[in-house]
Length: 252
Image (cartoon, rainbow, N blue to C red; front, side, top):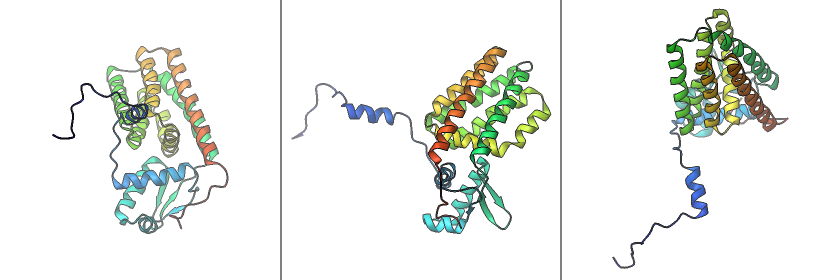
């Protein structure tokens, strides 16, 4: 055809194109409308734009983003599962207590409990336990590649919960589950601060390998390294929140 020619060789990508290809090499996650709404509110909570106790009114949020109340209701349900929001009978929803002290205490207590749980699990782990942990880990790695943060957070919680269950210590496991809201909030916050979920998945892979080898020293080292990195992410998040955060317009 006039004006068309067939190149003799494939053109080498320019520098900017190579950067774009690298940035887009992983598929972008598909998000439903409730997930998109939840992501916006979650970020506002975790960055301090929405303060503890702030009411989240379905009608006000729906009007602000020009949608019906149904997707907003579903979004608040997702945030409730994350441990960031609580629904009150006949009063709508509000942001849970989510201050620096709450996060730091949840982090330090969780680290102590989980190291103890792992030490007990080492003596009891079955092939079925290891298969379950590896299955959850594969799911985390796949979610990280898709940047599916919500799915990643859920699998992250279930991975650690499986370690407590494998410990065989019922009271310890009940104590962990009693902290579920705060732990889920902590996971949501640190995974938001870390934009490289594949690195987070690798930290969990290191824990799994140590458990599979049944080495006390190796498991303790992997656990402590994991929580040290989480502490770094928490410091980053708290610094980003800064003082004087104000409630956003979607609350009353």
